[in-house]
Image (cartoon, rainbow, N blue to C red; front, side, top):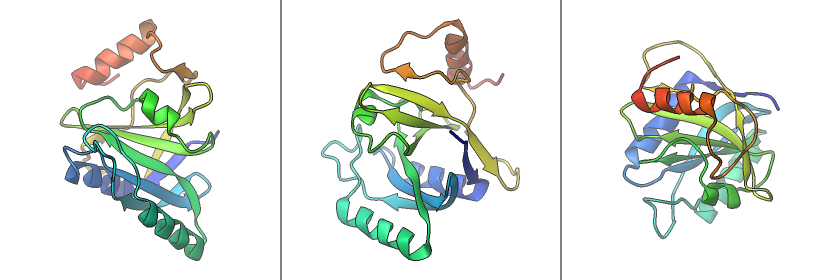
Length: 178
C-alpha cells in the first residue's frame, strides 16, 4: 500500500479543526487523487458521547461525496481526533471502520504537540496496519508530528508492545524524538 500524501497546509487545517472541537472528538473526510489528499472536509460529530466517540453526520457526508464526484476527486479516507488518547485505533474505531482500503488518520491532542498517524483498519480481524504519511510543501514551524511507532506489522487491538514499540511509545509520550 502506498503512503498517504498530504500538503502541510491541509495537515495544519486538519489539526486546527481537531483543536477547535476540543474537548469533543473531531471528524472529517479526506478527498484527493489516489492516496494524495487535496481536500480536507470537516464533518459534524453526532455521536451520543462526542467526547469519547465520533459518528459522521449522514447528510453532511452525502453532501461531501457529491462534492467529490462533481470535482472528480476520490474518497481517500477519514480522520478523527483522540482528545485525551494516543493516535492509535481503538477497538471501536476498528469495528466501525468502513472498509479495508480506506485510510484512517487519527490525531492525538493529548500533548501540546499534536501527533498524527494513519492506518488501514481491518474490522473482520480487529487488526490495523500503519500507513506512512508524506507531508509535502513548505517546512515552516508546526505543532504536530507524524513520527512514532515505526514497526509496520499489523497489530491486534490490545496487543502487548515489544521492546522496540515500547521504546517508541516512551519517546512519543515524553515528547522526545528518535
